[in-house]
Length: 377
Image (tube, rainbow, N blue to C red):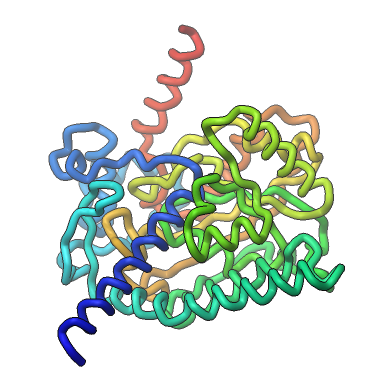
């Protein structure tokens, strides 16, 4: 193989991975709050805590571990952290992301993921094109684009299987059983999950059998693969700069719920920079209230350890990092305020998250105090 051909292959692989990385981040329609330079210099209080999760829990300070103990079950406190140190990651490449300006690392595991993505994505693209054509041509062939969306689920499952990263599914698993047309056997609901990593999207598509629709950022339409899936699958796309568009998409999400199709949303509104559960944004739970459907929380554990914020792609396999999704019992919203619903959802998510994904007590209380001050002002 000539040097020119090798160079072209490397460029193609890195370009594909970059698009995958960027797209996964944008699905939350938010912006990451972590500045890695500040993390290293520890200029901010929050980032000094965020830096801890780059190291195993065993070398975190006693004071910080004690601050967690007041709201974490003993069984979770005893579980060791799956987060790798930089020495354990053994990066081959260290570089700065052109899109975000943040430092990124790529190791042997990441290169494995790059190769799998490059080899499998063309088949996914072809499957979407064929399925979409059949849906447009044959009446009743693909109502609600369920078959079209299934091509993405197949790709995610193949991708995670080929990289030894298939998640463990626990909890109320029967709730995810589907009927002959892909609908939920127990009716529609609003799925909500914590968001700690780029990898969450693929994990959710892997474990959720029912037809569902993501709430995603409108700008993703321009991206190959995921953009094609979101547009062709008629997911809920939001233009944050247009209030009329926001109202339209809100109604679209409610209509999906009323017609028996679940919605998948991240109440934090952004990806957590350090894996710890953040404060929730307002408005998400009002969709469930309006459509009169229950809320099903999904705790996604250890994606922050498999693909941390500094990883261009995963730095360890999901099997080693213990990827896990826990399906909680549904939360009834009848007669409850959005604040009460938010509290129940938060408590449910935290019950099945490892200690290094729980917010630190002082940080959580500081955020609550800041919100109260803003209300008073």
